[in-house]
Amino acid sequence: MISRFFGAILLAWLFGFLWFALFLPQPASEKVATDGIVVLTGSKGRIERGLALLRNHKGEELLVSGVDRDVKPAEFAHAYKVPKDVMKRVTLGREAIDTRSNAVETNNWLERRHYASLRLITADWHMRRARYELAQQLREPVAIVADAVVSKPSLLVLLREYNKYLLRRAARLFGI
Image (cartoon, rainbow, N blue to C red; front, side, top):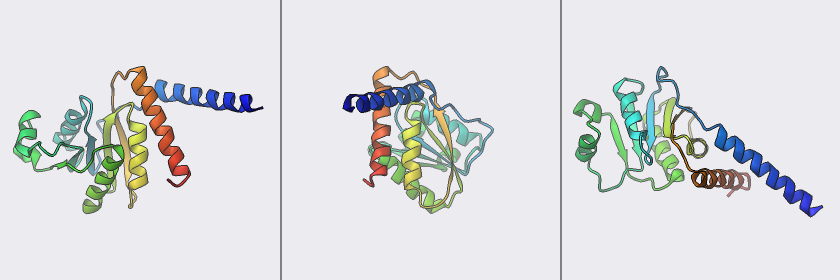
C-alpha cells in the first residue's frame, strides 16, 4: 500500500517534470504593448529584450530588477548602449536578491505607477516560478504578459527549477 502511494507520487512528479521541461514558456508577441516592462536580471538576453521593447514603445517604463548595488546608471547605459532619452524611462532596481524579492520589488514599483498591465521578462525555464511569485505579491490587479527569453537550460537547471516551483506552490498551499 505504501509503495503504491510513493510510486504514484513519483509518477506524478515525473509527468509534471516532463510537462515542465518540454513545454517551456515562449516569447510573447512583440506587437503586444503593456504599461510597464520588468526584466529580472540573470541569464543573457533578458535586459537586451526589455530595452528593445522599451525603445519600440511597447511599454512606458522599464524596471530592471536585481541590479547589483555597485552598478551606476551611467555604467548601465554605456554597457547596453542606452541613449539618455531612453535611460530616463529605466529604473534600476537594487533591492532584489532572489525571485521572491524580485516580485516584491516589482510590486512596489507597480504600486507607485498604478499600471494595469506588465510584461515580465525572464528566462524560459524561470518564467513559471517568477510569474507565480509576482502574482502572489500583487496587491492591485495587473495583467501579466509572460515574455520568456529562449535558452538552452541543462537538465540540472530544469530539475532544480522544477523542484523550486513545486516547493513554492506547496508552501503557499500550506500557508507558509
